[in-house]
Length: 562
Image (cartoon, rainbow, N blue to C red; front, side, top):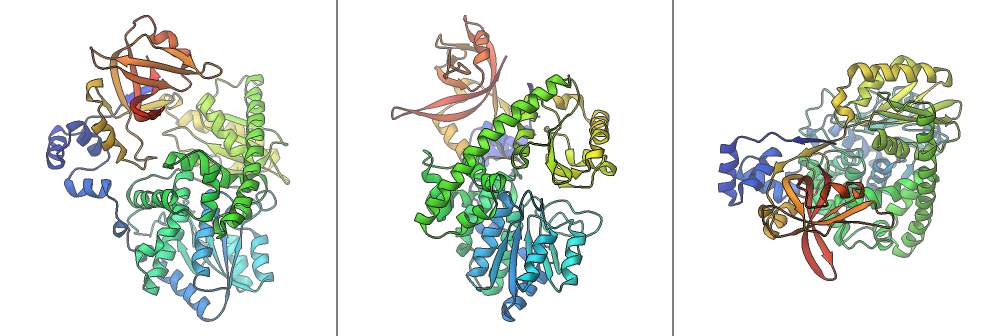
């Protein structure tokens, strides 16, 4: 692991902020690192408000989208809410369809089949719309590159409104409205919304037209917060406000579908991390193992009893997904070893029988193991389909653009993408991708990095400090939980491995006669020798509360030792 200490901000700015907030300079330093330099900015950070959300009509084409929906309602048209089969797509469809149905009954939903149709807007979906007398499709979390599909729909007399957050191509679809803050001609102040976030801005704009107060939109924010967490978008600016209130909704008054999922767990309070690792995989499992419409049905169900039955079925999908994920990961790792590809700049693996629904998860697992840009391919119809994952600091989407002549279709983000290509192009693509990455990546990026916010001493760790840090939440990209480094620590003689296989490390630490602090290092059991025998060592860690037998104490959550 590379330990990278973030640069110290201007000490005068730090001191002025500490004085204005009446906090320790360490707290002020952490705030300045996050771009917060004065009292008003700190107030907005610690106390997000719904009125901090931007005017939705600042988004390009928003007036056109609202006008077209209102005309459809006034003239009795049927509207189809269309979204992708992942968490961002299914939450978007649940949000938009449930809001529109509160105004108007002629609303249908459509999630493409992962295996029969693939990602995004499909010709089959448009044919479904035509067969069912639908004249307006609202596409969420997809559509920004659906040039041919939107033209096909227009020929059939079907209009499109696109709500997307992916990077546009050189041409935009010929839709009535294209809502995407990443459009070059869009001056919307915040560019990092997820697909569900763009959908939320559309219903917010409709709400303005209907004269609705922003508070009335709170019941939809559990969906938005889940999409923000699952899609790994920055939890900054507007996303921070939406996530903050969405998590409150999940913890206080979640919709029936979320309540049914929560009841299956032992968690009492959900953080953004819990949403990412507990709620999102279950919603995703429906689209991976069966069909995304099951997730939409769960998220729009109002009967808790019905939702419990649906959640039980989705839990079965998730269990099946876990088994496949583990099996395919082991096969992929073996393929890399057998082909002696451990020293390449990339990992590109393929097997025609791998389940398309889990190749994205497998790509993430391989990236964790070898820490390099990774693609996992499988057969999809008469094409090959792949999920791509990257390492921190490297834009895999740009790398794929460098291989565009080998690819039939691709889309995604800096760190995650999907693509299809002809089987005859696989070998050519594999070598081209390796060369593009080898020629462009900084070799330092191939070693995992721990970004350290600040050096501290154990004497600075106090209950008050921990309470203030808790107010930095929700944590995620752009606002990770602060990570600290402490030097010349010693074990109190308590160090041991824990867990059934001894994978984890448990110890107590002191520094220059400080009071002992307990510490836990998950998957750090192999570091036991580093801390035994009174040796001095350095550690990087986050801080957390540890509750045991009714007693609450401060604990270091270790990330690495040396």
